[in-house]
Length: 384
Image 1 (cartoon, rainbow, N blue to C red):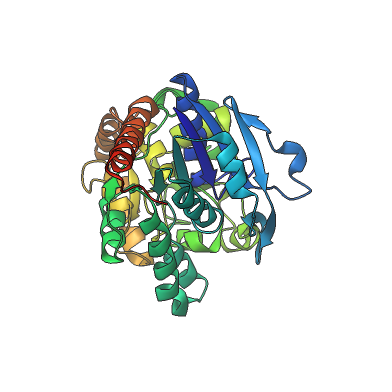
Image 2 (cartoon, one colour):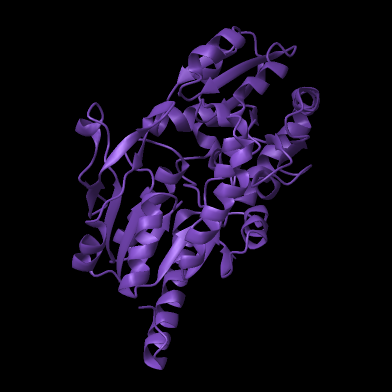
C-alpha cells in the first residue's frame, strides 16, 4: 500500500500531532508499506534539524509561514504544486493528520484525484481560540473543520467526546481511533531513584505536569497545587509560556524539554501526574503517565474523560477550578496505598494500547476506505 501522510506538524517541531505521525510512519515501514510525508517547511533556524527522510518515507516540505504569536510553529501557505506531487507519488490512501491548512489543500487534492482519504481529528482549534480570547471565531472554525472533514472518506477521532463534537458539527463517517503508547519506553521500570532524590530530598511526593508550556494548556492552574504540604511540583516541557510560569511557580522544578530516556525517567519518577488543559481531544501525555504506572488527575472534559477512569486510574476535577484540582491532588498525596493501587490499575488499563495494535487498527481503516473506493469506481460513483 502507498500512503501519502499530509500533516500540519512534523519534526523538528514536537507535539501530539508529530508524535502520532511518527508512530504511524514507523508502523507503515514495519509492515512493508510505502509512505510519503508532506509537511510545512521548518523555519530557517530549524532547517538543519529537519529530517528529509523518516522511517523510510521521504519528507516533502510545503511552503510555510510562522504562526503569529507562536513563531516556533509553522503553518502552510497555499501550494499549487501539492496536487502534482500527490499525482506523482500515486498514493492508494491519503492520510490527513489534523487537517486545517495544508490538510485542507490535500483533502481537496485527494478528492480531485479520486483517492480515498482518512482524516485524523486531533486538535480542538475552537477550544484553543477561546483560550486566546477569540471565542467569536468558534462557529467559523467549526464550519471550516466540518467542511474539510466532510471531504474525507472517513474521519477518525481519538475519544467519544471528539466523535460527538464532529457529528454535532455535521461530519459523517466518523469512527473512534484511540492513540497508542510505547509500553517499553513508558514503563514503571524507568523510575529513577537518583532523580527522585534530587527533586525530593526530603521524600516529598512528586506531582508533575508534562507537555507544551503554551497558553491553551492552562498550565498556570498548577499554582493551585504548588506548595501543597509534603509535595514538590515538577514541570517537564518548554514553550512560549515558560518564563511567565517560572515566575508564577517559583518552587517548582522546571526540567525543560525532555525526550528519550530523560522523558521516560521523568514520567515514571512522578507520584501523581496532573493535566490542566480542558481542550484536549485525547491527551497523549496522560496516557504515557498511565503506562508509567502513575495515576492521573485531569479535568472532566474532552479526551481526558476517556483517558482517565475516575476512581480507578486517576481522578477528575471540575475543569478550570483550582480548588477542585487542589482537592483531588491532595486526596492522592495523602493516600499512599490508594495511590499505588491506582498506579497499578493505570498501567494495566493500557495493556492493549501498544502502537502495533493501534497501527494495525489504522491499517484496517485504510483497507476499508480503499475497498469502498474500489467499489465506487466499479459502480461508476467515484469522486471526480
